[in-house]
Image (tube, rainbow, N blue to C red):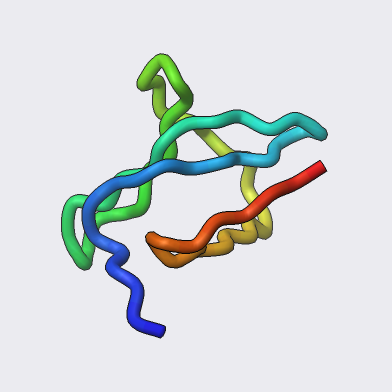
Length: 64
C-alpha cells in the first residue's frame, strides 16, 4: 500500500481514555507530523512511546 504522508487529513486521537477528533499535518519530508484538535490547537504528547495507525484515504475505521 502506498500512502501519502505529506499534507493533512482527519485524525482520531486516543489520549487518556478519550477520543479527540482533529487533524494531522506534515509540510515536508523532513518536517514533523503535527496533530491538532477541533479548535486548531496543536496537541502535545508526553515523552515516551507513541503509536500511529494510518488508514488509507478511501477506507474507514470504527471504535467502541
